[in-house]
Image (tube, rainbow, N blue to C red):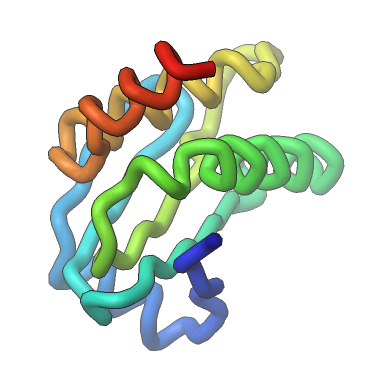
Length: 124
C-alpha cells in the first residue's frame, strides 16, 4: 500500500522551494512542505552540475528506490523534493550512501516513524 504521487509540475517545485523547509546532507538536499493529508508526493532533481546524464539518472534512480523502501515509515501529508548536490570530486554515492543520508534527513525533518521502523525490523 503506497501513498506517494510524483511531482512533475515546475510550479509545484517552485512552491516547495519557496515555502518549504530544507535539510542539507553531503549528497542531497531535502525540501519539505505540508500537502494533502492523505498522500505524500515526491520530486527528484539533478542539475547538470551534478554530472553527466548517466550519473544524474543513476543517482535519481537510487533516490527513488530508497524512498520506496522508506515510504511506509514516513508521515503522510508531505511534499518531498530531493535535489542532488554537485560534487567536485568524481565520487559516485552508492545505494547505501544515499540510504543513510535519506534516513538522516528524514529523521532531522521529523517525518520518519522510528517506532514503526524498529517494530518492522524486529519482527522480520
